[in-house]
Image (cartoon, rainbow, N blue to C red):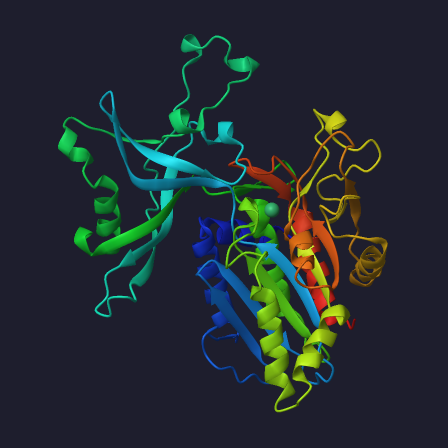
Length: 435
Ligand code: CO
């Protein structure tokens, strides 16, 4: 169990942005016999084959086609590659009182006070001039050094600090990156930093998307080494549990096993690489077409495959907080390391219903994995996942599940070593079972 947890910490460390998360997955898939196929190419897919495709460099879909697939159906694990954070704005350099600061925009619902006083680094993607002018080259960049910090105000300058501090996104979330003596030092500071890291000329950089991330690596913690403390557990824990499942599960002969890792869940999923797109639907249709050959009823086969399919949307769940138990439902209170959590919402913020929960409970029994139940405290609004959004595009049975955790959307979250292994076991069993 500890090995899987340490592996997760390593994988998250290599994945400071959704682009890097996809790149980490890509290298594992390539070394596990998966073939990369491009969305714009014509596909010829084999039964028994392992494939993956990437959209926008930040969403990834890996799938295995059953050797004896006759009547197409999909077993899908859905998750997301993005996490809340600080995105660098265009022309970001700002001078203030002898310091150079970087202007940022907040991506998603970050717990901002946790971003203060931490060594921060920068990573993202950069577009570089190409000979073919309208096809610029994309390069990933990771500065991989602690280069900035968001300093807190000293206690002596705000005696009220422990009563809670309101954060002004535009005024306060400006990481300090260095001291400066002269104005000219600020010119293109960030572009120069990226150019140096990528060994290209500043003039060759056309544009970039950069994010700050916590430089310190996560780790397995606790006297009994039972917890994982790291950034981006939501939702990279699920991404890498899903990846482990699809790579290492035994052959399932009669279905298509698919891992869908979407970007932009934290900002509502409405993008061409998000769950609120036709991406997964188109992908499934193309898979059915490719395995149906010249069959004239391929379209019907696809439409029939949807209701026969099942998706487990895997995303972080809330453990009861031992210092704030009143924030949880009085009866249904997940605890870290007591098993993956089924998330339920009467208002369809989660997809789980008695129909899908019944299937899932039977699956848990087959896998030998315990389950817990989460439902919001009735006065709390709670969150959502890709599950309900996906359901508006693909009318298949669906359930929302996730590892219980503390401090969701903090720069440093915490989940359980045992739960991570249990989730891998559960997903593996799902891929190996017949629907
Ligand atoms: Co999430």
